[in-house]
Image (cartoon, rainbow, N blue to C red):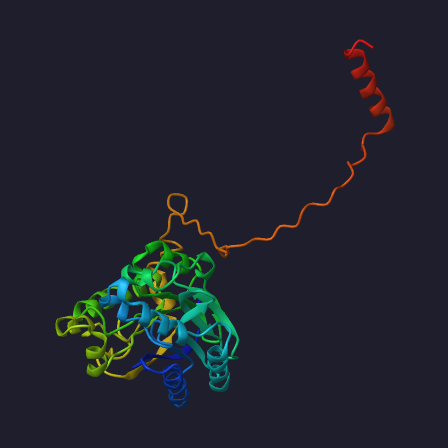
Length: 341
């Protein structure tokens, strides 16, 4: 049952620094401070905004994108590391749940990683996008089922997915079945064109309705100069126009504030948890509207690791017989008789 409370949330449309390893982090920390002054208790930043989304991979042939990819390796944070320490400190100082998208470097591989810091600064969740989309597969490795879980935070029960993971209905259902109250979604923004924002809105509003939860969605935004710099030719510049939709949506599928579709900024709204009960009374997709005896989801939530160490079993003597002496004697007599001895 949903607690009777209200949480102030913020979705940030951020302009990343594409030429600075620390520049975007500084913007993130400034936005947290700004949100804290407005009484925000939960804040969501765009997909892999730290240090920046790999826009280059959308328009650059794989054979020539090596330098840009290596530059991203150079700037990508480790988890834990200085970037996560700074985000944790900011979350703790503001008493705010912070949902941050990063390009995580784990030795020789990059991952599209979502981090959820609780209001006390602890890292409540680190999850990796389970399937990078299309061009992204040349940039990131794949995550596993260990991140398909909700976490209890000071703001409520939080779930998170990135971009086209929302087109995997079973991934969404995994979080729905764990009764997420606030779904934190992240997209790149400034990509594909206006149709991307239109599709995003349909998808996010549908998830709010189906899950009966609040959705806080954040996208990034590139300046016209950044778009030109990312495009290898003028005709490809249109690949970075539009595609921004930063919004906060109620369990009834309604915008709680005017979405942000262009420029930098912050969408702030109050989440009245009574609306969760109002929606689920009518349609609870994982409760009274579900038919688990007909349709159910199996989730492998084990972390996938390339090496599992198993110690050699130690030699153990055979267990002594537990038969009473009389039974043991009769048993041996029967064996002797059957063998004709």
